[in-house]
Length: 573
Image (cartoon, rainbow, N blue to C red; front, side, top):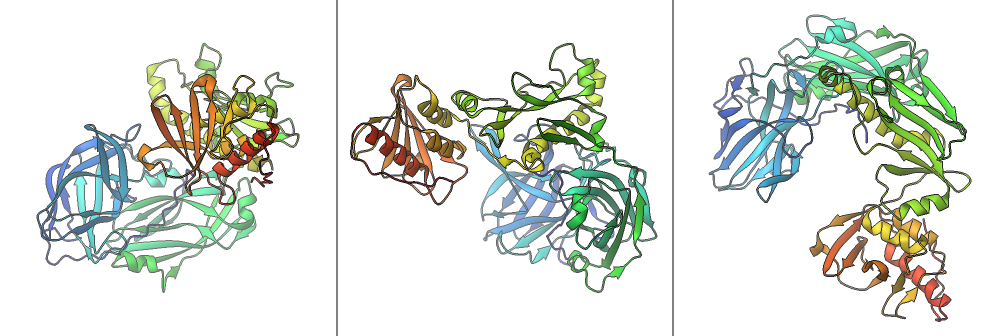
């Protein structure tokens, strides 16, 4: 959900040179990404096996394949720590893949993994991306880290290797951090740069802070206090630990009144630093040295502000000049805001070019009708005071347009940035406008329940072994269906289907039925002919199960049919 990653790195490091075959910290070993033995200890041997892109991630995400074999007599928990990529500190990860029918279907990203005695397998090295201006980490030029060993995956390491550096030969185009903002500290040990100001819908204004360690020691940096346009902040979300000669790029965010500012023109921060021989000592920040407050001035933050239907849409300064916003009056489809990328809008020759999203309203009846069928490209985000709903509409195809292929490549990052911002608006629009948040699933299971409740053509029945089938026609199934649809059901493995009783929803016109299990994990099963699909709810409320809600609806149907069924008074969340 959150695009900003605060780099509070938690792994500890202790450089132990004795007893290893690697170079000292002053002259770190540099290896090739293919065919280099980068670790050999206790029977565990790690060999690089080529630079590649992660096969389980869409887009470019560099990895380095590893062949890891354990010829020793005991299991070894191998880990990585103290990572950097292209000179910037970030978490380097070990990746364990799931192989399915000859391909890779999933990945487990972790700091350590157990290597069983006698085993040999293929793994990979990856890293967390650094989402900061001027840092281009889609290309992997150099990766540095230390191997660790621990008792198990839950324990702190008791062994740290000397630094390992893998140089791929790929050209990296990171900007000089001094060019990315205002240099507020630059001495023989440390450089600090305040980069551009940004705004996050959850955390408020924030600033990208770049740091460079010029020493051969570890440096820990913390922020003690801050003041923005005269508003004081006693707690700052910022901290970084730099390995010798490395840099970091981290967003600084604030707690308290500063969060309520849309932005600021003057920022002053008091830092503490600690220089130490090891990372854990640098992170301890005991007997740290406070440096004089550093200040930076920003230009006025110009926001885009739009109103329609009593609601507001605010566009942050960095996006304002890139977007076009329409606020139609009395739109027949209930649209209040439509947002498009201006450059695509100008370059496109078709209606909808550059469209990112729209926000609009529908009545409860309109929504119920929509929920009976596939709603790709439409999401419910909030409930209105009059009982209607606010909807978020987004394209299901790419609307990015430029006049030339060269321009398409040039502006790809801009388009991706705007798409990410549009997703943030979806998640925060209700809160920003003081609306009651709402959401409904639209899986096949959800659509069957919706049709049973709101479609006149469904002819659905509910049944248990207690009274047999009963038609739901004529019952008010809205409260039950809306409760079930909030569960957000997703497909799961068929072999996880629980035993025991269940409530059956049958739609004979479609030759389909849904079994709602009285089981703790909210399972339901769709049966169509000989085919069965098991679903599990993503959101479970412990007070009422989905099977209990369907049972209560069933009792309503039974009483309507003249059967003396219990009158359950369920309070549905």
